[in-house]
Image 1: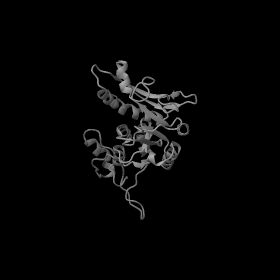
Image 2: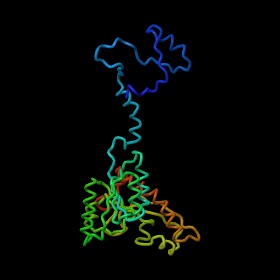
Image 3: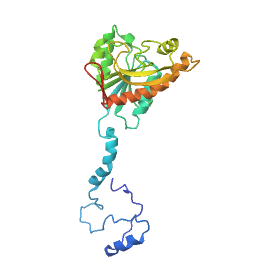
Image 4: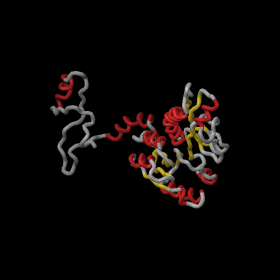
Amino acid sequence: MARTFNCGLGMVLVVAADKVMEVISLIPGGEARQVGQLVPRKEGMPQVVVEELEQILSAVAAPLLTRCPSLTTPRRRVAVLISGTGTNLQALLDHTKGGLSGAEVVVVVSNVAGVKGLQRAQEAGVTTKVVPHKNYKSREEFEAAVNAELQAARAELICLAGFMRILTGSFVRAWRGRLLNIHPSLLPAFKGMHAQRQALQAGVTLTGCTVHFVSEEVDCGAIVTQEAVPVLPGDTEEALVERIKTAEHRAYPRAMELVARGKVVLREDGACIRS
């Protein structure tokens, strides 16, 4: 690097050793520095020797590494399970792009072939796998095939993003504390299907989305994060769905980051530890 990078030098002047201070005093702005000296080169020695480069770079980098622990801490390997268009998947991919996230999406598994979500993953350079649930006689056999793909990718955390299969208790227990889902309501309100319709029928003025750890009981796991969304006068179900979806695209990456960095951990009693 020292042979190709200018190390911030805009110009180099070569002057006699006894004229160094005089020349520096003549350069306006006080930005001139002596950065080295010319000496006879011994045979086999490099043309340029940079002293203490590693120590100086380490000192400069230290504050940055403190602010960005992902630069020194291994990123958690995330698998995303989908069944459709993958808009939440796209939010997760966008969040992890650039390397500053504590998470990295390493594989996307779909139980349906040809869906838009697979294309999104491929365009992001992420490995995709299709495991059609119809090819298996039981949920257990299907999940064993999915689990094989997760193990092959060395996944450490799973995000369900529009994955339209109910997981068995054995799968949920195997991934306890490492399995996230997002639901379009402020849980524990409006569990199950058509949560947006339920909110409109109930006449609430506030709903939203919840990212939670998956438990054996549907939509009952410990809450990682939530984001509130107003229900506006005259809202249709379609309008509310889209407004909540926008909130989901913020909440899911935030939740993934919290869990990946160990800021939110599932306790043995099913509650969350936050730090």
